[in-house]
Length: 149
Image (cartoon, rainbow, N blue to C red; front, top):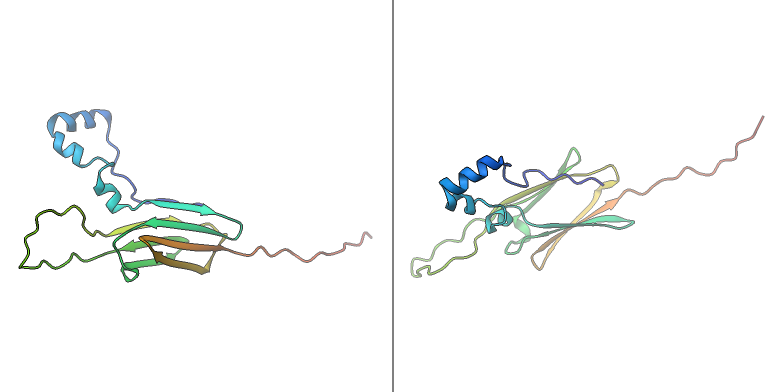
């Protein structure tokens, strides 16, 4: 099974471009670094495992409801996305600190011919979206005796 990631990392800069960013705008350079929370908020981490019967795709996406997810398969491309609307502010409360927020994400994977599109299942529990991608059953031709003439 082949999985291809789309839009996974910021554009790659040349060494000179990185040095220029560091000296001209250090705060911007550090903010845009792929190791910030912004990167992982926009691209949730994924684990992919395989056994004889299926592939298992697990995405770490806490704070969502199962209704927030949109999963589609078109032209062998499995797309998983979610969007959560920001909570309405309570006029009677003053926000003192906000370290987490809800963001949208979109991850796409190219599937190979072994995946049975009719048997894909998804389950969301404990902040992990689990997709079970069943493999097609291999149909072997019946044994046939060939007569030598």
